Length: 343
Ligand code: 13P
Image (cartoon, rainbow, N blue to C red):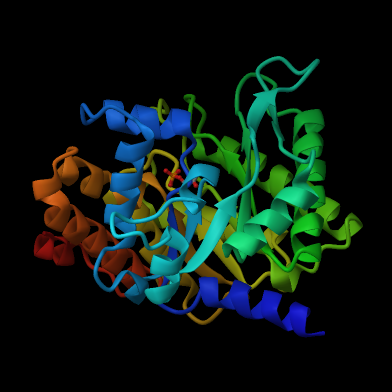
């Protein structure tokens, strides 16, 4: 069937060699926090100006395969009246859309959440398809703590993600399933590996039960890292090895690609750890390993912009630089010395 081929083509295009995804789907609350950090007031127009800066970055499509948009953003246009979707398509960047409505407290599971957004999803997906979206994202958050995560919270999130993924494929939209084991806490890398492994195993059981075609899907996940408060911070090699081990045990080989979130890692760690995985795994892994970073791609650009129109060029150069560094990391060809060519 043509639509199945289109799903496969889109999934593969999103993880094409040397390319990854720009996550620019911050909800209004989250982008507000990012703007607070640079002293910019978040309004519909300041958000539009900032996203315009990102999407009109010269040669964006060189290292960016797709961009995840928020509901407000997929409807917005540039100053000269071109829709963002049109601008992205013109740059060879595939538009995508965040369709979950956020993580909410899970009843009877103190300290844990379940991500909502299934109600009305079939209709919302057809609207997003009409607006130009070809892939979607749903993020579930998993917390490590005393006796956490529970099997109950992992199962609730896996079930919701599987239903979301099936609805996406029905609408010819590639689902990115994103279980994020959070870095908050003082747990060690072994605890992250165990939680990530259990989460992925449950997720792929649910996706199989929901009859999701894995070849037309992507996984977005955290790297296996110690908590932010853990006294032992492992090096890139240990993180890369633990992450590859966890993925190899739990992610079926039909999945064309795994894209990482940055989750609060520094920009350069997000790049060097991805590089290390591709260096170690070179040629031997069933899936492409790439990026779908929000903060680790946008951070330097947001800081360079500071809300001032005069800084748009510098902000775009900062984004292009991070995209290029991460593009190199997809092939294991990144070196820290290359950072000095930064804008
Ligand atoms: P970060 O890279 O900032 O974690 O964002 C990626 C993302 O899309 C989280 O859902």
